[in-house]
Image 1 (cartoon, rainbow, N blue to C red):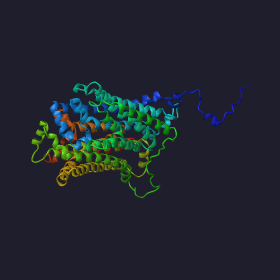
Image 2 (spheres, one colour):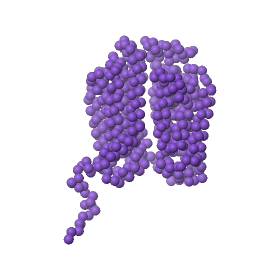
Image 3 (spheres, rainbow, N blue to C red):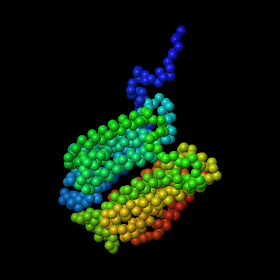
Image 4 (cartoon, rainbow, N blue to C red):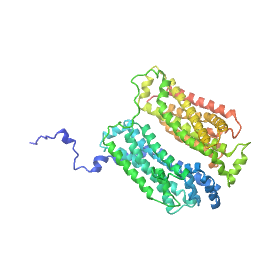
Length: 552
C-alpha cells in the first residue's frame, strides 16, 4: 500500500529546491513580454517617430540658421551666454559643429522627455494593469510573481535604447561621428534606463497609476530643473550629480565624452529593479505606501452627476495645471532675453523687421510658445477621455446610469468638465508666463494684456480638439487612444508647421492654424465663431451617439 503523506500546509509553502530561481519567480516571462510588446505596438513606435522628427527639425533649423563655425560662435556668445537659455538647455562649451549645436539645442529637454516616457510606460504595464484587475488574473496562472514587472521593464528599457540609437544616428549626417555619437546614445539610453528603475519602484510603492506616474515623472523633471541651477548661476555644481538628467549633462558629448555617468544610470536601474522586486514580493496586490486620501463615508456635496464628474476629474486637472504652470513659468522667464537671439542672425533680424508696429521678438516668442502650450493643454481632454473609458470598463459608469441620471446628461457633464478644464489649464499657463516674464524684468501690464489676448483666442481651437476626442469616446471607447496622435498632428500642423515647409492645405487641418495670433496680427472673429460652432456640433454628435450605444 502507498503510505499516506503527512505533509502539513506549512510544508507545502516551502520552496521546492528542484525548481530553479528563474522558474520560481519568472515563469511565463516570455509570454508576458509578447503581451507587453503588443500592448505598446502603437504608442511606443509613434513616440520614437515624434522624437526623431523633432530632432530632425532642430538639426535642419540649426543647419540653416548657423551654417558656419562663426555663426555658431555667435550663438554661444549670444543666447548661449544667457542664464535663462543655459538653465533650459545647458552649457555651450562645445558647439563647434552642427551636430554638437543640435545636441545642445535639443539635448537635455528631450533627454528628460525620454525619462518621463519611460516612467509612464513602466507604470502603464504594471500598476495600471494591476488597477484593472488583469495582474491578479494573470498571476492566477502558472506565472512567476516577478514576471509581469520584468516584462513591462524590458519593453520600457528597449524603448529607451531604440530612442537613444535613433537620436544618435540622426547626428551623423550633420557632422557627428565617433565616440561623441556613442556618448549621445548613452545620454538618452542611460536616462531612459534610470527612469525605468524609478518607474518600477514608484509603481510598487504608489497605490494608483496616477500617483505612480506623478511621482516618477516629478523626480525626472525635478532633476532636469536642479541641473539647470549650476548652468545658470555658475555655482552649485554638485546638483548635476543628483539626477539622471544631470548625469547625462556630465557625459558632455563632443567635449569630455565621459561614459562614467552612464554607469551611474545603469546602477540606478539595478537599484530600482531590485527594490521594486523586494517590495513586490512583500505587498498585497492593489496595495501601496503612497495612497490617495480616503473620502468620507457619506457626503451631501455631490448631489448631481456634474458635481461627481468635477470631483473625479479634479486630481487629474490639478496635475495638468501644475505641470503646464511650471513649464510656462520657465518659458516666461526666458521672454525678456529672447531679443539676444537676433544678434548676428539674419533670420531673426528678418522676423523682427517683419512685425507690425512695435511688436518685438519677445512678444512673438510669447505668442508662439503659448500656442504650443495651448495644443498641449488640449491633451488634458485625452487624459479625461481615457479615464471615462476606464470608468466604463470597470462597470462604474453602469452604476451611475442605473440611477435616474440619463446617458445624455452624463455625457454632457463630462463635456462641461472638459471645457472648464481647458479654460483653467490655458489660464494657468498664461499666468505662469506672465509671472515668469515679470520676475525676469520684462514688465507686467503690457505682457499681461498680450498674453491674455493670445490665451483667449486659443481656447476655441483647443475646444475643437477636446470635442473631437470626446466624440471618439462616445462612438467607441477604444477610439480615445487616437486622441494622442490627433494632439501631436495639431501641434506639428499648427504652431510648429513652419519648421516643415508643408503645403497650406495640410496645415489647415489643424484648428490652431486658423487662430489669429493677436497681438502679432489683427483680430479675426470669423474663425473664432466657426471653431466654436464646430466644437458644439461635434459634441452634439457625440451626445446623440452615446445615448444609443451599448455601455460597457
